[in-house]
Amino acid sequence: MKIGILGTGDVGRSLAAGLAARGHQITIGSRDPSVGRIQDWLRETEVNIRAASFAEAASFGECLVLSVNWAHVRDVLDLAGAANFAGKVLIDTSNPLRFETDGEPPVLDVAGNDSAGERIQGWLPDTRVVKAFNIVNAVHMVDPDFPDGKPDMFICGNDDEAKTTAVGLIESLGWPPVIDLGDIRMSRYLEPLAMVWIVHFFRNGFNLNHAFKLLRK
Image: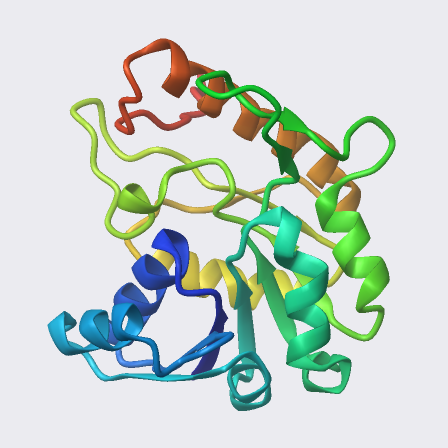
């Protein structure tokens, strides 16, 4: 599959490398794909990934992944071009975080009867948005493995076919069967769940090694 990754931070790089290693064609987008940091990473990565502009990555991908900080999401969507999203699956990894005090956990900039997932779906009405990957750190997005077993991934979105596509990609990255919470409004609960992860991170010495598991009987 042709996949466009929007964002070259930790999440974008982790998912790009993991998906490329599984045979997908990956273009990763940024404001300036020629900068040294991106090019250095591409040289160090053992799989074939192409760097391009946001618009090129969005145009290239049959499926897209949004992996930029919330403060930049609207700008990146504009740079990528709305027409390049039409009809496509967009996996939204974002959390609407606002940082107010140094050394303290952020707060949700959007919460209650709204969510980042819903806003992105509203901004891109012809795109099939699936919220995923927002509840775990980038270091555990590919082949997650903990002493007590594999964690769970929760998703939501309005389009069942889009969720099937997202599930296939997620499970190919080493996750157990995905837990579907329903339509995109369930982002209202997934994004606060990410805050539980973040607060625990701040209270436990900035340790990245935790994730969520739904226990069943």
